[in-house]
Image 1 (cartoon, rainbow, N blue to C red):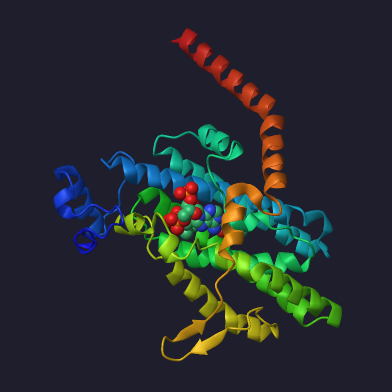
Image 2: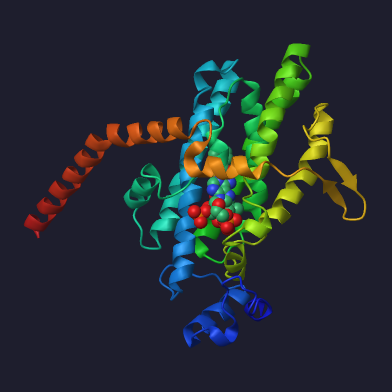
Length: 330
Ligand code: BYC
């Protein structure tokens, strides 16, 4: 059993002997590959970790609409505009499935939103970087959605049923997103020298932020050991980062673009690329709220929340009236 393997590692993961009978039975279900459903007994830490991760994931989908939404009105053709619009709408849908999955754990969407708005909950670091040119729409689809797929495909097998099912749908849509990004990059890379330079510039700016999406290096990851024991996470941050690099470098070569890393080199022995780590100081600054766009992103979400107040209140008043009418008729 995984729980036994990680016994007394100092990772905070309980050994089998340290677990209560309920926790042991729960861990045995996880180890047997069973799905945990909302009404099943679960340790409080499992519930909290899921709320944190699914909530953060939901917020990322919602905040993630902002950098791309920025380009809908400036897409170069009607077709590109329609595709980008559809993609951004998909992200809203992903956010909603994920909020619903988190709600099954006993937290409301409004509570999670309030925690995002006052900084108690995070969203992915990547969305704190600006999208400066049309080529950035290509880089975001190719690299950001590409990293998201790398992370989310294994999450289809995550132990919590509603999260796992949401991921199956999300991943189908993410594949389309990644292809549309790569398609933009192909057009730009095969275009005029100026267009190719824009594509290269977008790759230069998004490469390291995309690597950061997988989280800190394993030695600094606080939650990985417990999350993997509970199958909330299926891989470590470094494993997924490595897979992403191995998958993406040949794609960059195909585009005729250069990955901005002088240390990038195929390592025959490990069967993967050696590459430079991102600037982890920058990563921790960004997740603390000091990235290039954190203030703008939260201001946009706060404004949307405030502007929507009258709609929420109207809907609640309508629901209350309907309920009272139904009660009076009974
Ligand atoms: N950004 O112990 P660790 C998308 C935090 S949306 C910000 O390794 P964990 C898309 C972490 O929360 C992509 N914070 O954490 C949408 C923790 O802090 P707290 C979103 C990060 O949870 C629209 C601390 O650092 N995908 O694809 O085991 C358009 C220590 O880290 C980040 C998901 O959310 C980060 N990058 O692992 C296009 C996937 N990394 O909470 C695309 C689901 C780490 O203790 N999430 N932190 O204060 C996961 O798989 C995991 O939560 C992570 C982090 C791998 C991200």
